[in-house]
Structure formats: structure tokens, C-alpha cells
Length: 447
Image (cartoon, rainbow, N blue to C red):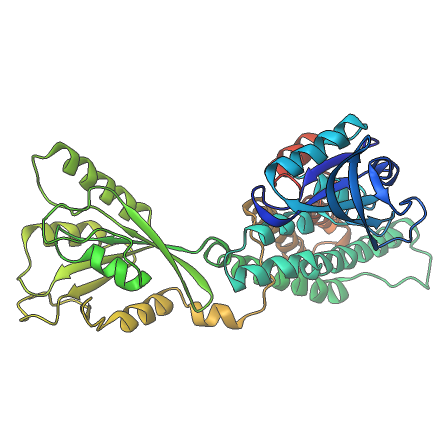
């Protein structure tokens, strides 16, 4: 990490401003060579200077340059941010000049990687940076910010410290039994601490089951036979004409997707091709794909035609989804009612949007979204982190069982060390270079 790196930290394209970030020990010195204005080597840290980026005597762009000196920067290195006018040609030219003066183009996520390797953030906080960038809802933003500001890190570090203190006292009891001023570690004073830790792990695991819903949203498939109003329902829910609607059966040949935010949660609606027996090759493919989408969806909304009795196609689809989370929506209640479906359902139509609020309320109820939004935001969003927390809890529970079986406290040392090891994997205490490179390669360029 001795070299100086640069990248565009804003979306590439035409815009008012683009920011080029430069980080490394020589960043101020190098930018100063191509900057016509104040001497950047003499300006105070965290100040902005007006001037021009120049290539020899040619003025390339009128800019504002922010100088931030180590260690109080994102990477803890000397950092310079060049605010240029937003334009692909201008930005590329400035980067070209920087490279000519010894700067290297940064790899994806390399700024955050340096922040991690330099000890400014831990692995959990580094992952939160990526999550924050990708957050599409307010709830997802809150989770990311809680992780980024160290809420979960502080909790895990406190648990790790509590375990370490128990280990140290047990080992002192073993090695120096004659010391009277060291607390004697017994089942009575160890068990309450371990049970408290187990409860904290359990809370993280339980709440993290909702992390997928909060960060990625809920995938809801709209299925049904042709011409029951699936596309019209999609358009009504999205409040835009996303899908083509006609009275011709089989209009939708492929899936059409759209998103809304419901109570702070992202809902991904997928309108599918009508399911029926057909000789049309394209429609057959669409039917097969509809069933596959339904199988992988978090929730299915089966749309039935309220203006006709159940058909063989309806009965077939009902049999396919009976063991999946689903809602039956009987559409077209503005017409004469003929549908004879007797199960739980919601009725409505897409003309005056009757029943749509009931449909949204049922979605909230099925996923308990109201209760999720009232909880704190100490969630884990990464599957490997959740897996390690589960393993950590298993080790703690093993230690609890050992003590409750009346065995000596020194026999829990192995489980306690294993628990700390799993927490360390989450925080990045001992992580291989390959894993570091793989993780940060998924970040966007400039971050």
C-alpha cells in the first residue's frame, strides 16, 4: 500500500460535479504538481482550495481541491479530492495526468480495503459501507449505518472481552491456586455470564432472519391463468403502466418486474405469463418460467377472475402453491360475481383499485413487517457472519452444558476460545489475504 491510487468517486457521466479521489503518502505532493493555485503542501488539513488542473501550461479544468492529511482521513492516508466539472472527457483527462505523474488507478473497493488494513474500520464495518451504497430503502440504510458506526462491533467486542476475562481467571485459578486475591471461577459466577452471551447471540440470529427482507426486499410473484388481470394488477400496485395490458389471452409472454416501497420495505412484484395448456411454443416456455418464478418467490399472489367460476387451470395452480406462502386475489369485483372459490381470499379490481390496500395490508401481516420496523437495527446481513454467530452460540451453549453437568470450569476453555475465534472471523481479526481481496473486489470503483 505504498503507492498512491486514484479513482472517480462519483457516477461517471455528464453532471455538475465529479470527484476524483487520490489516496497515498504522495497524494498531496503529486496533485500539487498539476494544480495551479495555492501551494497544497502548505495548506491546512481539511481545507478546500480553488484553482486549475494544468497539463504543462494548458488549463484542463477549473476545480476545487480538498486536502486531508493523515491520519484523519477515510483511508488514514494523505487524501486529496479533486472536484471537477462533471464530464467524461474532463474526468478522463485529469486521471490521465495523475497517472502520468505516478498515480495508479485504484482497484474496486481499494479505498475501503486500505481503511480496513490500516485499522480505521473492522470487517463488519467495511461490509456496511457496501451495504449503505446499495441501500434502496430507509430501513436498509439504518441497518447499514448502525453497522458502519460500530453498534454491532461494540456489542461483539464486549462479548469477546467478557469471554476473555473468564478465560483469564480460570487459567489463573489453574496455574496459581494459592492466590487468594483472584476470584475463584465456579459454575455459580460463570453460568450467568455465559447464558447472557447466549441470549445476545440468539437475539442477533433471530433478528438477522429479517435482514434479507430489509436489505433485498420481498419477491412477490403474480401468477394465474391468462387474462385474469395480473398485468393490470401490477400496474395498479406500481401506479404506472409497466406491463402491456390487452384483452387478448397470452399477451404477457415473459416476466415483467416492478418495485414499490411499503412501510419502508422494498417489494419486488413479478408479473408472469399466464399458466394454461397451450400448443404455442413461446407460451409454453412462458408457462414453465412462471411456475419456476412462483417456486422461488417469497410470496405468491394468485389472481383469479371474479367474473367466472373456477377452471381446471385455476385448480391446477392452486394445487401447485398450496404449500407456499400465498394470497388469493379475486379480481374484477366490479363485474358480476361468479367465482365459487371458498378459501381465504381478498376481492378487488384494478379499475377503481378496490381491495389493493387490503392486499398490501396482508403482505405486511404475512411478513410481520410492522413488528420488524419497530425493532432496533442490530442485524447481520452477511450469510457467512450469521453462520459464524450460530457457531459461536453453539460453542457457548456447549460450555453452558458442561457446567450444568457439574464438570470443572477449566473444561469450558476450549469452547470459550472457539467462541472468540468465530467473533474474530466476523470482525476480521484473522482473515486471509485472498478473502480480503475477494470481498473488496465486489465494491464499486472509487470506494
